[in-house]
Image (cartoon, rainbow, N blue to C red; front, side, top):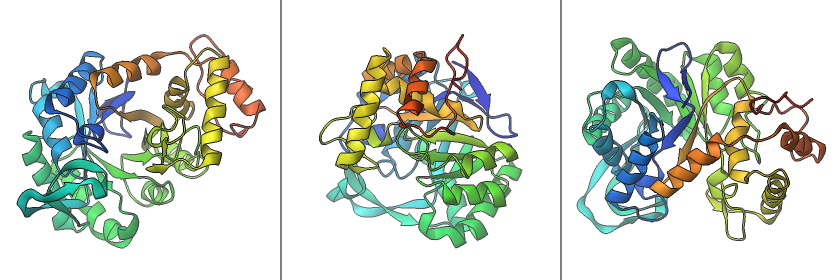
Length: 337
């Protein structure tokens, strides 16, 4: 699988990365052996970039990722996690309830505490290293600082710079479900990479006119998450999820139109959704959350599928895509006009 480096660093990431929210029991439980099978299948397929966070299952995801990566050569993978939420024990071991209010089907043995202070960021990384059982983290993203911008820019980001200078992490950035504040990180700081979730997809191109050109101009990498917009573009149907909630009828209809277009051109909607971000030069990697070996296998297969230029051409002609949205080129084909 092809590999690129993040920003001006030497940190490599595979074009397809393993997003570990799902194996943190996102929405429904995942057994330990199922999680390990998913990770092993990803590794066998050539995936070497793994992304996790304390938020995912209040530590479950980090522990599972760490359990797996401890069995693999450290020089052969890149690991990212996130800072901004500290995990504090509830004191009852989770007996008081589960974490479904935050989307994870796991006992609420810890509670999240927002903390974008310098000390909080450093502690977050130290706590993550302990949960992972590893001696290094390659990339750290500030996680969802939407409502904490002042502290994130004044305290958290400078601490990431210090940690990078100390060699504790190799690359730094921010990960969010919006493009506006990520653009500010690109313009006003020295981040290496930003993780943009759900804002550069077949259904949502809000990152196109601000974040992506700024990142390209400044040599900052963009990793795109949420290419399926929480599931709708993986399986458009009644009851499907879009941006963590029920898909509105108009959005569902648009997704079904995309699916019909894909079928006419002999490809799957999943393949088109995975290919789409790579039309833009700023995009370095795509992260996809998978919870089973079967899902990983399907994702890798769809990622490798060629999406013909005629598909993108018709998407423009039928106004599914605006005319100024760049689209990827399949091997041996020219970019559509």
